[in-house]
Length: 417
Image (cartoon, rainbow, N blue to C red; front, side, top):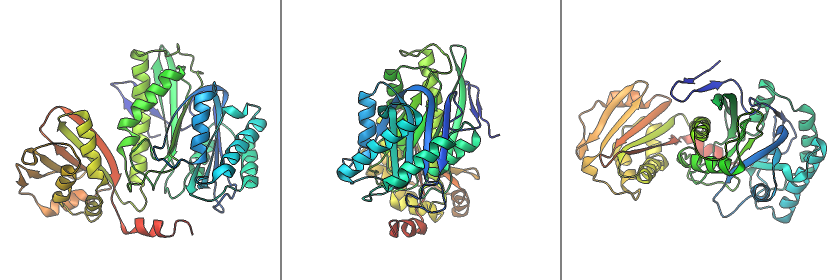
């Protein structure tokens, strides 16, 4: 088991994903929505009603499931299930697309014996195509029959939401609140049309923590600023971005109703999970060969640090240089310079680092005396970091992206066909 024990905050990474928390089940099945011979529909279900929170795309063009889910979060007292399909996004589909969301929720609610308005829906895939409702409903029937707790069920679900992703992305952690063991798990998909503006993906989190809706939404909204908002693959913000968290209270802890030690512990665990998933998405960018991280330290303000870090990982020229293992620090300095944050370029230090070592490449306004061969060796690792010390203050931020390879164009040149 891949286990991480964070001694400082008492969080343990455990096996599992969205069914690790008490009371949750999942499933993934093949419904032939667009793909053939692969799972393409997923279900997450709680045996009891859940408090729910979410964040959604900032794109003015919003897919039908986003509109449906936002209404559920605003109007419904609770949620209990999420139905997801991959292959077709149900975006730019007009009234028919909205009717499809309603029918999905109605049919799933009927089979699960829960109200229609506690069923959330999500879609990912090609924009502009209508969902084949007959196949969607047959998929829902299969999902309800297959739902289960455990490793196989949650892995099936994680695989079913993938589009151009090359790996499934899931995680679970445990921690203690008011003497009770609490579990938080999650899964996400995201490989292309990824750009920081909220969460740029489909992501689903489940927890057995008992927490009020107000505090759950507050925690999620604050968290995405330094997790999913800090990733980019290609600069495009999707029409379907959805991040949902269900909390069913089955851990038995005293309800978190306000800020304090218990709330902070929950937020730490949430950030552990979301940061892990965000990095998995960035590293699995379409055509990527490397996770490209930029850490900015010594910034004047927290917002400046975020702006500077994101500017570097969004630079197409820098991403191409990372793919070529080329220590082209001029592109990095250029990206910092057009970010909009103010700094003195002659007071900046730039470093490349990876598991192969660390090298100082720029300082005091000029290139450092470094070995190109050593720089290339460092940049050839599957995870590469640019460290930028601005020497302006004490704030820092980290952003994650990927390199830009030939395969990115190949994948997106015929995505519809």
